[in-house]
Image (tube, rainbow, N blue to C red; front, side):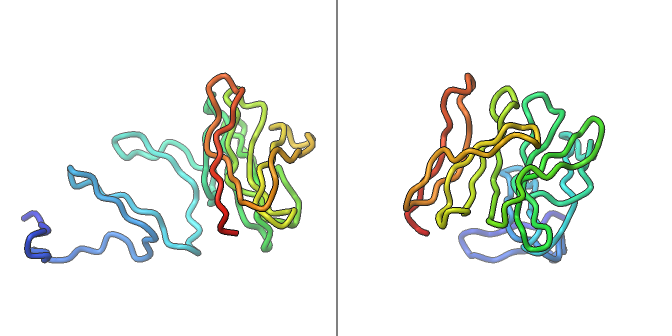
Amino acid sequence: RQDRLHLARGVMSGDPVTLATSAGSVSVSSTGIIAYRAAAGAQLPTTWFDRSGVALNSVGVSMNGPELSTDGRRLTGDRTIDGNRDVWVADLVRGGLTRMTTHPAIDGFPIWSPVGEQIAFHSNRNGTIDLWIKPSNPAGEEEQLLGGPDSEWPIDWSKDGRFLLYQRSDLN
């Protein structure tokens, strides 16, 4: 028997089934497929699946805001280690993780440039959340792209790499 939500009456029919014990957010498709994100504090390894639900790969650790490089060989995201949130890169071919930033401030929400030679991220190292960029090799220097009284974080790059789309908020 299929469980149903009766919108007009605002009630469910059928027996409840526990899908997750610590869901932070939930989304349900029109076909009934349910996706959820673990609640804050849960440390589940970053894993991706094919369309049939078979796990394809995992970096073995939890990464916030993971993003695959365009060639699919690397993954970037941020992780908090010993209270310090930094940008990390996972090598999906050879294995291994590389810490890309080490500043004691919050560094996060990294995104790849189209060719994968740079990573844009946000950081609060100057008191507000500003846009920064770094070459995708660990030895490269970080450079502030945009700063000021508002908070900015990267969203996407143009396909030709000339423009960086970012979001701005004055809610510091």
